[in-house]
Image (tube, rainbow, N blue to C red):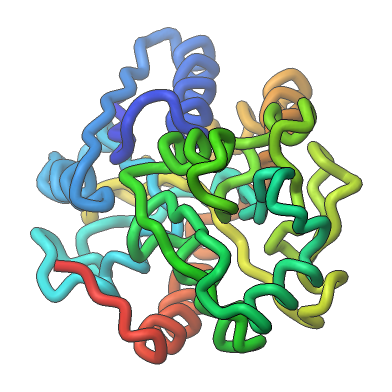
Length: 292
């Protein structure tokens, strides 16, 4: 088995897949190899899997980025709606808004108040242009009128480092990427984007609790097979990934860094993709975000 991760090694998605690969290797008695193919907002890795044999030996790790890229890019080297077969939505990873404590911003309401009273005065480091953090913050802006200065980075790591150093004020990023910094007091967590609080940082409120009633955006990670992979093969991989992420030891590790176990069937995952396609297209079109 070969799992392509379309981002650089070391991030939360990479850590997730390496843990799952380790557990699947133990379960199957054969190696599960993780390959990082970063670049072009994940489209390089996705293109590799789209062209792979549909024999159950190659998977793509992706999440909402697959849907976002289909909306944002004028051209892709694959058909995002036809090239892949959903296998499983493995985990949900809340986005969390964090600031450097020296900003003097203490909570999400204060953040919104400053962003409305002093437009563009808050610099927000984005883990990538057109990613879920960008789209989620555009939803916030369209709902509230809050205006910040977006600073796009090549990934979550560089954005986080610049917030820690005080070069930018804030970042909206996957919770698993900054859990340790928040626990150490190096970053101040204002709110999470999900409808529920994270068990990893239970004192951090949701945005819905903090001035945006009904607001909820989930970032998630799942696995796709090339289109044409037999249904029986997909069903077996689904069952085995479900088993390894639900095992108490693995679940505890994932939840400690901020992931929430999702699971479900390939059909469940397909429904998630369809719903997000409609919702995110509306926000992206209103904001005028495009990638080339």
